[in-house]
Image (cartoon, rainbow, N blue to C red):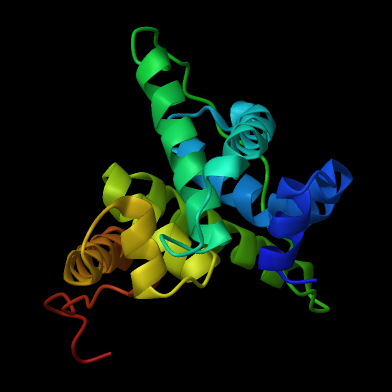
Length: 197
C-alpha cells in the first residue's frame, strides 16, 4: 500500500494501519530529531519527541491534504516544529555540555585503527553540522542524511527552493571551513640550516 492508500484507510476508520505508516518513517524521523537536538546536547529527548511527532500527526491526520504536501514532508514539518518548540522551552535553563558516545556503525575493515579514524571523522563532521545555525543545520540534515530533494526541504522549512540552495551552500562552506584544520596538512617551510639535509 502507498502512503496515500494507508492514509485513506486510516481516515475511514482502520486506525490499526497507523502503525504501518509509523514504521515506514520512524527511523528517519528519529534520526532527524536526534540531529536537531544534538547541538543543544538534548539528544536524550529524541525518542520522546519522535513519539510526540507521531502522536501529533495521528491527531491531525484528518486535516492532512496531499495536494498541499506529501505525507513525509508534512511529517518532517511536524517533527521540526516539535523540536523547535522543545528547544524554546529549554532555553530558560542551561544544559551541561557532555559528549554522546553514539556513533554510526561504519563498514568494518581489518585494522581497528581504521574504525577509530572513521569514528573520529564522523564525530568531527557531526560537531561541525551541530555548530550551524538552525535552518542551515536542518537543511543539510534533510539533504545529506535523509536525501530529500530541494522542493521537499523548502516545504519543510517554509522557504523557497533558492533559499534552500543558499542555506545548503552556506552550511557546506561552514562545515568545510570548520573541518579544514583536521583534514588538510599544513605546509611547513624548512628552517634555515635544514635545507641541505
